[in-house]
Length: 288
Image 1 (cartoon, rainbow, N blue to C red):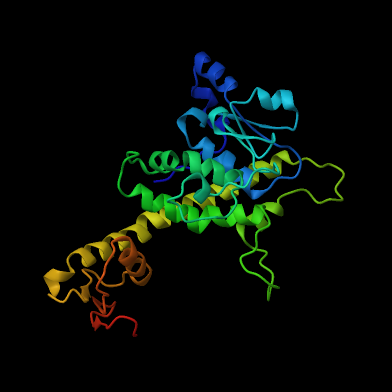
Image 2: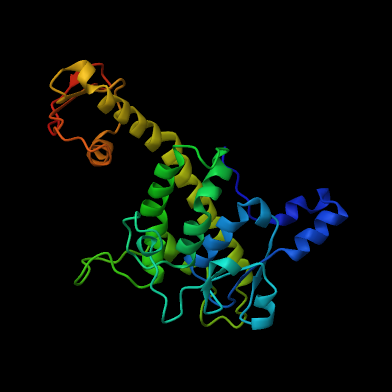
């Protein structure tokens, strides 16, 4: 089960005096005023780690207050991971997952969410899933979570469109838009963004955990099943062109195309046989 760690107040009554003093010393800094999806997610992600689990979120642009924080995201004008400073607004910043680690294929400019995920993502996933950091399943989940959750937030925050040219219609229900709607109306006298930011952290946290749960419980087992079938394909037929799925109902197409590349399958797989939900055999590949 994935636990949503958002508000440290729930744990205060059980904390010793020493723990309270420690908690008071741990701070995550970000900017005040209007908030966005990337820093809300960055703060949520950091809160999933033991060292930041009870951290206070300091929202300010005051340089002295931010200097006293253990980690600062989306503000401060510097990207210095050695000091846990993760801003992306400086003119000189152009980092992507690829530029920071060339084996990654993604070239989208990172936001504070992407920076935190790059530096802490594998630890966060291992903590949430109760796995060792060296677990062989983590790299696939890490890549999937970036490509199918974090990258969109990075791109939207940096104003990067999915395509060239004019859009045919507007997308206004994505996660970044929904976070934006939590800001107070421009014409409201009381511009208190604190309550909205807490709601934003809860929203992005729930979405992140739900997506991770799906990939861990559904997407990953399907990938494992397809990989096993690929590795055993010569046991089914000496040609190596026939894939026999051990179970029906498994979404296999995406995994097959990706794993053919990853496993460097030279001879193309032409047929996929599996039992459908009614107990009937289905195939060949690419046909209904």
